[in-house]
Length: 126
Image 1 (spheres, rainbow, N blue to C red):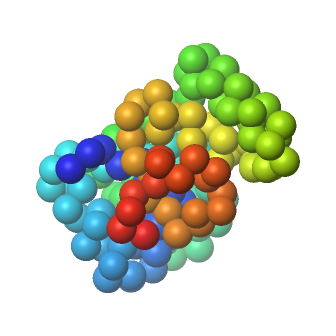
Image 2 (image 1 turned 90 degrees about the vertical axis):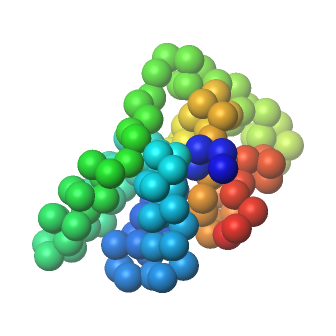
């Protein structure tokens, strides 16, 4: 299986008990293929309930964390301009996550397919 960048929505599903998300993430952990953008770490903390701290910490620590580098930031800017030129606007965070996936050769696990115009980046399972 190809390495997978877990989008925040799937991480939240896992943390809130989704069996489908758990099956995917546990398989990725077993294969050491689970990655998480540092931006998803931010989003998880921003939306975390007070009772979810330990579970969130354990989840984050079990994933390979992808940092935002200068190369990723430049690629994200290029992708944003390309999509904007086609009439598609996406958030900066989603653009940076997509650029991370492209440059690090990840698929993205997300249910928010509209957030990512390059459908080839998406894990077919969701």
